[in-house]
Image (cartoon, rainbow, N blue to C red):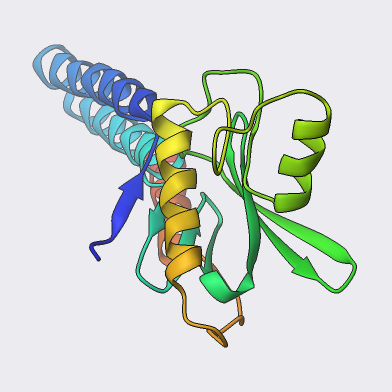
Length: 195
Protein backbone atom coordinates (compact mmCIF):
# COMPACT_ATOMS: atom_id res chain seq x y z
CA UNK A 1 0.00 0.00 0.00
CA UNK A 2 1.30 3.42 -0.92
CA UNK A 3 1.99 6.11 1.65
CA UNK A 4 -0.41 9.05 1.62
CA UNK A 5 0.32 12.55 2.84
CA UNK A 6 -2.40 14.91 4.03
CA UNK A 7 -2.05 18.65 4.50
CA UNK A 8 -4.47 21.52 4.40
CA UNK A 9 -5.11 22.91 0.93
CA UNK A 10 -5.18 26.41 2.40
CA UNK A 11 -1.58 25.88 3.54
CA UNK A 12 -0.48 25.91 -0.10
CA UNK A 13 -2.47 29.06 -0.82
CA UNK A 14 -1.14 30.96 2.21
CA UNK A 15 2.43 29.85 1.55
CA UNK A 16 2.27 30.87 -2.11
CA UNK A 17 0.89 34.30 -1.16
CA UNK A 18 3.72 34.82 1.35
CA UNK A 19 6.33 33.60 -1.16
CA UNK A 20 4.95 35.89 -3.89
CA UNK A 21 5.05 38.87 -1.52
CA UNK A 22 8.62 38.03 -0.43
CA UNK A 23 9.70 37.65 -4.06
CA UNK A 24 8.13 40.98 -4.99
CA UNK A 25 9.83 42.73 -2.04
CA UNK A 26 13.20 41.22 -2.98
CA UNK A 27 12.90 42.21 -6.65
CA UNK A 28 11.81 45.75 -5.81
CA UNK A 29 14.65 46.13 -3.31
CA UNK A 30 17.22 44.91 -5.85
CA UNK A 31 15.89 47.32 -8.49
CA UNK A 32 15.35 50.41 -6.32
CA UNK A 33 17.47 50.32 -3.17
CA UNK A 34 21.19 50.75 -2.43
CA UNK A 35 23.17 47.49 -2.26
CA UNK A 36 23.24 47.14 1.55
CA UNK A 37 19.50 47.75 1.90
CA UNK A 38 18.78 45.38 -0.98
CA UNK A 39 20.82 42.64 0.73
CA UNK A 40 18.95 43.24 3.97
CA UNK A 41 15.54 43.06 2.26
CA UNK A 42 16.50 39.93 0.30
CA UNK A 43 17.70 38.23 3.51
CA UNK A 44 14.51 39.25 5.32
CA UNK A 45 12.37 38.00 2.43
CA UNK A 46 14.23 34.68 2.36
CA UNK A 47 13.80 34.28 6.13
CA UNK A 48 10.08 35.03 5.96
CA UNK A 49 9.71 32.57 3.05
CA UNK A 50 11.54 29.89 5.08
CA UNK A 51 9.30 30.58 8.09
CA UNK A 52 6.20 30.30 5.90
CA UNK A 53 7.37 26.92 4.63
CA UNK A 54 8.29 25.67 8.12
CA UNK A 55 5.07 26.79 9.78
CA UNK A 56 2.46 26.57 7.02
CA UNK A 57 3.53 23.99 4.47
CA UNK A 58 5.95 21.46 5.98
CA UNK A 59 3.67 20.17 8.80
CA UNK A 60 1.60 17.24 7.57
CA UNK A 61 0.01 13.91 8.40
CA UNK A 62 1.39 10.88 6.57
CA UNK A 63 -0.11 7.42 6.66
CA UNK A 64 2.34 4.61 5.84
CA UNK A 65 1.91 0.84 5.85
CA UNK A 66 3.10 0.57 9.44
CA UNK A 67 2.41 3.90 11.16
CA UNK A 68 0.82 7.32 11.26
CA UNK A 69 3.43 10.07 11.05
CA UNK A 70 2.30 13.34 12.63
CA UNK A 71 4.81 15.98 11.59
CA UNK A 72 4.21 19.34 13.25
CA UNK A 73 6.37 22.47 13.43
CA UNK A 74 8.51 21.45 16.40
CA UNK A 75 8.21 17.65 16.56
CA UNK A 76 7.50 14.59 14.47
CA UNK A 77 5.70 11.60 16.01
CA UNK A 78 5.73 8.12 14.45
CA UNK A 79 2.77 6.19 15.85
CA UNK A 80 2.53 2.50 14.87
CA UNK A 81 -0.99 1.26 14.17
CA UNK A 82 -0.66 -1.20 17.06
CA UNK A 83 -0.57 1.79 19.43
CA UNK A 84 -3.57 3.67 17.97
CA UNK A 85 -6.74 3.33 20.03
CA UNK A 86 -8.91 5.41 17.72
CA UNK A 87 -9.01 8.50 15.50
CA UNK A 88 -11.04 11.69 15.91
CA UNK A 89 -11.49 14.26 13.20
CA UNK A 90 -12.72 17.64 14.30
CA UNK A 91 -10.94 20.83 13.33
CA UNK A 92 -7.79 18.71 13.35
CA UNK A 93 -7.03 15.02 12.88
CA UNK A 94 -6.36 13.53 16.32
CA UNK A 95 -4.69 10.16 16.79
CA UNK A 96 -5.55 8.84 20.26
CA UNK A 97 -3.27 6.37 22.07
CA UNK A 98 -4.24 4.69 25.33
CA UNK A 99 -1.53 4.41 27.97
CA UNK A 100 -3.18 2.39 30.70
CA UNK A 101 -6.16 4.40 31.92
CA UNK A 102 -4.87 7.59 30.34
CA UNK A 103 -5.33 8.77 26.76
CA UNK A 104 -2.64 10.65 24.89
CA UNK A 105 -3.68 12.70 21.86
CA UNK A 106 -1.39 13.50 18.93
CA UNK A 107 -2.85 16.34 16.86
CA UNK A 108 -1.83 17.06 13.32
CA UNK A 109 -1.50 20.84 12.98
CA UNK A 110 -1.86 20.90 9.24
CA UNK A 111 -3.96 17.93 8.18
CA UNK A 112 -7.19 18.98 6.50
CA UNK A 113 -9.81 19.90 9.04
CA UNK A 114 -13.38 18.73 9.17
CA UNK A 115 -15.76 21.15 7.53
CA UNK A 116 -18.71 19.72 9.48
CA UNK A 117 -18.96 20.70 13.13
CA UNK A 118 -19.63 17.18 14.39
CA UNK A 119 -16.51 15.08 15.02
CA UNK A 120 -15.77 11.89 13.14
CA UNK A 121 -15.34 9.13 15.68
CA UNK A 122 -13.81 5.70 15.18
CA UNK A 123 -13.86 4.61 18.83
CA UNK A 124 -16.43 1.76 19.20
CA UNK A 125 -17.63 3.01 22.60
CA UNK A 126 -18.11 6.52 21.25
CA UNK A 127 -20.00 5.19 18.21
CA UNK A 128 -22.33 3.20 20.49
CA UNK A 129 -22.88 6.31 22.61
CA UNK A 130 -23.77 8.27 19.45
CA UNK A 131 -26.25 5.57 18.41
CA UNK A 132 -27.93 5.77 21.84
CA UNK A 133 -28.18 9.55 21.36
CA UNK A 134 -29.86 9.01 17.98
CA UNK A 135 -26.89 10.04 15.82
CA UNK A 136 -26.20 7.55 13.05
CA UNK A 137 -22.48 6.81 12.70
CA UNK A 138 -22.85 5.41 9.12
CA UNK A 139 -20.63 2.37 9.34
CA UNK A 140 -17.24 3.30 10.70
CA UNK A 141 -17.87 7.02 11.03
CA UNK A 142 -20.16 10.01 10.71
CA UNK A 143 -19.96 13.61 9.50
CA UNK A 144 -17.10 12.93 7.11
CA UNK A 145 -15.55 15.75 5.16
CA UNK A 146 -13.39 15.20 2.11
CA UNK A 147 -10.13 16.03 3.86
CA UNK A 148 -10.11 14.77 7.42
CA UNK A 149 -12.62 12.04 6.63
CA UNK A 150 -10.28 10.58 4.01
CA UNK A 151 -7.37 10.68 6.46
CA UNK A 152 -9.46 9.10 9.22
CA UNK A 153 -10.80 6.35 6.94
CA UNK A 154 -7.30 5.50 5.71
CA UNK A 155 -5.95 5.32 9.27
CA UNK A 156 -8.83 3.03 10.26
CA UNK A 157 -8.23 0.78 7.24
CA UNK A 158 -4.54 0.49 8.10
CA UNK A 159 -5.42 -0.15 11.78
CA UNK A 160 -7.72 -3.00 10.72
CA UNK A 161 -5.02 -4.42 8.40
CA UNK A 162 -2.28 -4.27 11.06
CA UNK A 163 -1.09 -7.67 12.20
CA UNK A 164 -1.86 -8.69 15.79
CA UNK A 165 1.10 -7.99 18.01
CA UNK A 166 2.24 -5.11 15.78
CA UNK A 167 4.77 -2.74 17.38
CA UNK A 168 3.34 -0.20 19.80
CA UNK A 169 6.42 1.91 20.54
CA UNK A 170 5.90 5.56 19.63
CA UNK A 171 8.90 7.61 18.49
CA UNK A 172 8.91 11.37 18.92
CA UNK A 173 11.74 13.52 17.59
CA UNK A 174 12.46 17.21 17.60
CA UNK A 175 12.74 18.70 14.10
CA UNK A 176 16.24 19.96 14.87
CA UNK A 177 17.49 20.60 11.31
CA UNK A 178 14.47 22.76 10.53
CA UNK A 179 14.60 24.58 13.85
CA UNK A 180 18.34 25.20 13.38
CA UNK A 181 17.84 26.48 9.81
CA UNK A 182 15.11 28.91 10.91
CA UNK A 183 17.16 30.16 13.88
CA UNK A 184 20.26 30.58 11.68
CA UNK A 185 18.24 32.53 9.10
CA UNK A 186 16.84 34.77 11.85
CA UNK A 187 20.31 35.41 13.31
CA UNK A 188 21.78 36.26 9.87
CA UNK A 189 18.85 38.56 9.08
CA UNK A 190 19.00 40.39 12.41
CA UNK A 191 22.79 40.65 12.03
CA UNK A 192 22.43 42.18 8.57
CA UNK A 193 20.02 44.83 9.85
CA UNK A 194 22.29 45.69 12.81
CA UNK A 195 25.29 46.50 10.57
